[in-house]
Image 1: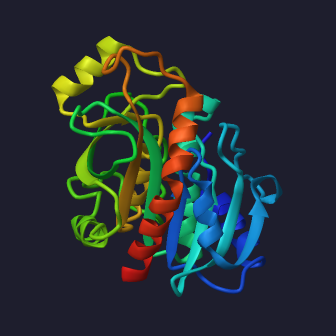
Image 2 (image 1 turned 90 degrees about the vertical axis):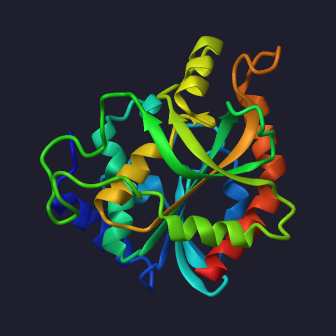
Length: 273
């Protein structure tokens, strides 16, 4: 069942009692990208299990806690561990974190994920800034009664991945040692990796990377009119691109290897906001 506006308010009120500031920036970290949390100064943590009405993160590599503190002088709330539809959650439930961040006062949302490369010009360790996405699943996190307090029933998504933030991120990539692209994220629900035939279809349709997250949070941010930056860490070549099998261990190891440079990059972006 979708959350009521009153339940969102209850969650936000509980968290406001735990922290002494309103966050400026909200971050949601993807698979094995939790080491960025070490960049947060003066941090305080709240376990998901302690938050009323909150969901639980069950995916490997997702810590399951909210971290409040500062990064480069900016007040942040960081979600270390996200929620996915493949964990059994309804799409309507996945609107939860971004709407709570909105009520806490966050002005900008940054999303990260680990993704498989469909574009053969990409390689593991590269970063892709999302300029658009493709989602063919019929479900939406905004299905059900509209909560006018967050946004209108029908809303525009043509620039949901904020162009100004992408330009800022491209400038911050200079000297980072990272190869940074702009491209299209193709959403599959998982939890199974895509088939080689599905990846060929994704390439024909214009997808550059493929993953199982991010899009629900991005749509919620767009509904809330929140500026949004979303980034994929390329952890592997997608199914059928190379003559080898895929594994979650490969994804997690590649994400962890990329984490130090990527964390420094995200910190530089936050500093420049």
